[in-house]
Image (cartoon, rainbow, N blue to C red; front, side, top):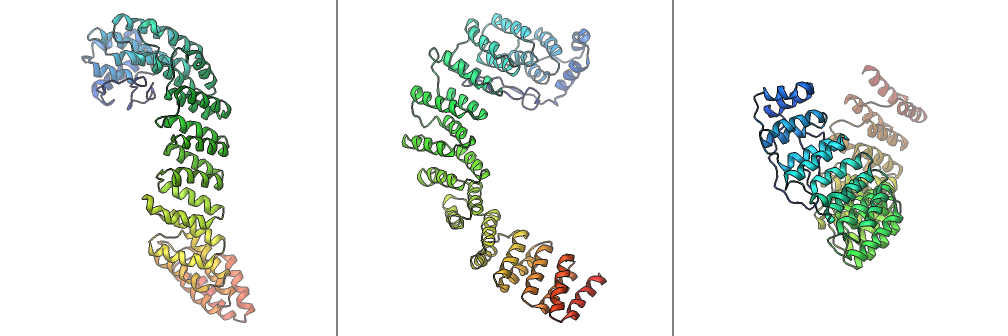
Length: 477
């Protein structure tokens, strides 16, 4: 059953069972003055006075108003029942209004009243549908009454509603939405499958339940039965997605890859949803080997088109595992898939180069970032300045500092402090004084720990006068 949350007034329940085509109802906005007035009456008027208040309100009920009011009446079911009866004196209720009433009663645990309403619908003739029973399934299951939901399925044919695969799937879906109850759904499936042949949606629902519970053993069993009963079919993508996701979430990526290869050999690969979710999980687990193998199967071999988010996730994962050469390969491939690198892409690679002290490549890559107008982050700038000094490349460090001064909206104190320390360590004390004075003029904060270290460098070099220039400037400010 496809239904919105009962307490969501902007998206009231449609109460349409899976596979059932119905015309879209006319839905009034909850701020419609007639709807608002009637809801105020229902919520504030004692039930003993409600019928008189409704009759004297001056609002003529029409189907659209009735449906809109019912959508907003889940919190006061007794008043909703009286409103339904009162409005029924002036009009013939639509099937949607009846189904909303069934849903209100069921969601509030008023199951005897719900069945009275179902029997009334049967007497009306022609308005009971799979959606009615899908609502009842959902209400019973939400209340933890799985047995009663199954009993409802068992009697629905007596009300002229077919016990077909749509009804089976509605019940399975309602059961599987409850935590830890997928085994109950599987038991019902085992009982009914000989009488009502399952379809791909049946198995997809069970897989989603096993995925939520992390039950890989039952998922594998269900997968085997699906292949026997419905065979291999590329249209069963949602089932394949859910099954493979179960394995990946349960930290069995090798098993997922094994089944993925079997699916590929039968031309039944899962879709972008699985690929995206699986990649996210592998990234969180820092599992670059299985992510790389997954990418090769889904993208390189099978032609799936990844987006920028997927490329960034993969490049970040490779960089975190020091596989920078592979990261460059992915960067070069991005335009062929219509995904163009952004600042996150470049900064992941730049950070990896810095972390691995690959100074020459980092310098070239920094130039490419500037050319492509992809700014390095302040933290990467500070780390790059430190790395370039450590690798005896002060020119590159000063190039990064120049970029910081020219391009960053707020001068970065971390980069400034790293620059001064790097210059001091190389004995460029006159440069230290000049840059420090300029930084102070720009309002850049110099750390006290850095000032103390600079003091030692100046004293050892016998140039306390240069240090005094810096401290005098600091004191004046």
